Image (cartoon, rainbow, N blue to C red; front, side):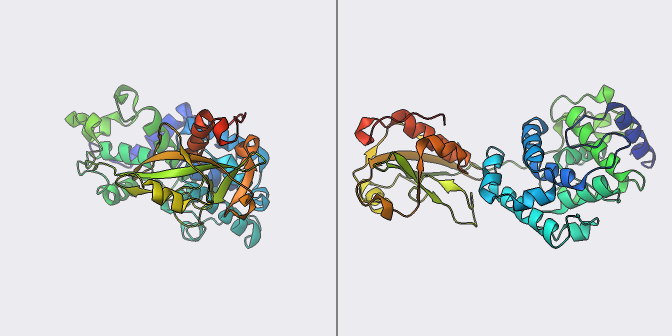
Length: 365
């Protein structure tokens, strides 16, 4: 760096005191941060932007203002409230963590990174954030914003994700003993508002003079990324089955794995290659009913693959109660813990399944 890096934290904190963002989970100057709100926000922000997370955070804290309130909430209520944030394993771990803190810990979060790492769903980033922001302990918080800032300050040209350990080590050299929580939030604010992925506002940056990437004119090129391979496409058929009472068959996914514990419209397995044939679709159906393929395809993208689902609709007969799953009135589907891909299936089926499959159904889904 161009000058003593010991000056950098103080300079950034001075900038932060003037330009800090007003966020719903952030303590105001002079206030003590609430560990529950810090923890909840950091879990939400792991894969979500601040604008997207803010309304969810407000909803959660209004319904469950303390970790003890969240601990006793039914898991399905929490999953429904989480819908749209994705990565439902985080929501299940959120519930487990709340129960752990509210139960064996008397409602108090531990203060050290080592103790925090023992909690369900708390990784290195979240542990460091809670320890520093909520308890004022020195800890190096590294998220995507921090990685971008550090890669530019030190002109790290090694591509991501291989550069992560190096960036963490470099970030640790800047973390101050004083005000580590404010410093962590300051670096994240800097990355979010000034040192942005595209067209960074270098003229407004408090670290412009020490930024090695800016000096070399490569700030917009960093951090470099290893090219990603093409995502595979998996395909399957979902079953839209109505019983004589006009309810839809749903089932619960296994607790472990993709969308674990969520409700779903039953489907065949999801596999690469061609869609399963008619015989395979009939054999995998939850009930032996006449099926009609609906026009069109439901498409959804997960982190590691694309999914294409066709929908087969049918009307259950007298044996409907023997189906493996549970029946939900269509107008109550909005109260189920359905992930985004399944909401797409529901909307597709409602748009295309007509009276041949038991009559049109009105719903607000």
